[in-house]
Length: 373
Image (cartoon, rainbow, N blue to C red; front, side, top):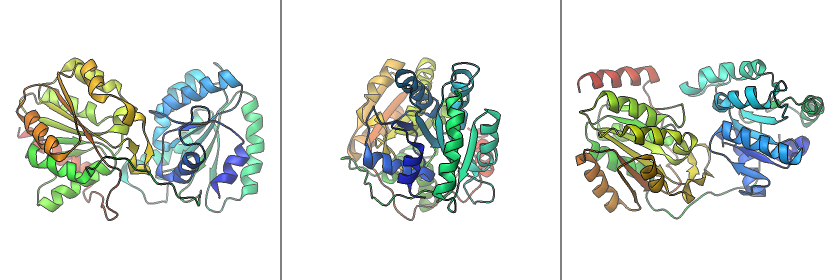
């Protein structure tokens, strides 16, 4: 289905969400048509954030907004859907467009399997009427369903279109880039060189895949790394939990700008606890690059200032490898909480692989290694 037709059928003029590779056609259409425009299209910090933003739009305009997300974001919308949007509370109508990763019977990565199994069930449990759109779904079927949905929306309830793999298309090409020069995979290689045998907790997406392949290229074991393949935004909290309980061991967290933004409150918790053995590295390309490259607002945020305000005693931004190496070496020797923001280009090699060990094997090997420290 052409994404332009879906947008026409829905008939909304405000979209907000968190990008998803399954919804790349929609995301590219919105960026091509509106870019980032607070009156028509906003990429939010997390899915609960965009649901509340959309609620504000409805309160101000009386119109029905659209919120898009990967199905992993359903957990983030449960609270605002149940306690804000629900017709037993404020009866705020909303259209959700949800990418169905891990759909039963469709091969996907382990972090998507269970979420895929419960995607529709969660919507049903939240009282959100839903309709799945696949490759063979006709425009007429979608239009007919939207007619039914309009009655539901008029009663103050919410609806959802669940998008199967390959269901949407958009012909226009959208290029995402920035002016930074460092490549993320090379940044990770520099981190690995300095961290040596210290444990690393890495964020979801391509950063963890590149860390895994860096170990392979160096002939090193994977036991040093916990790859947070799902649970976007939570790697720094995992690292905090490890650091507190291994106080005599340097712990490194390799994070991403979109992940930090998704649950930025974690930085306040880290800063308040001030684990002296934690190095928090944020690789910032100002983009949700793993799912297509759509922008985050982190290119405009003073993350070093945020970290210092949260209680990080040492925080710095670097723009080249010379400064990166110097700050990595300094952080390794410092006995205090550190944040290093690394400004990064957008892009990864086309043949980037995925971890060949299972998530359970990763956890068990990491835990066994931590026992020796």
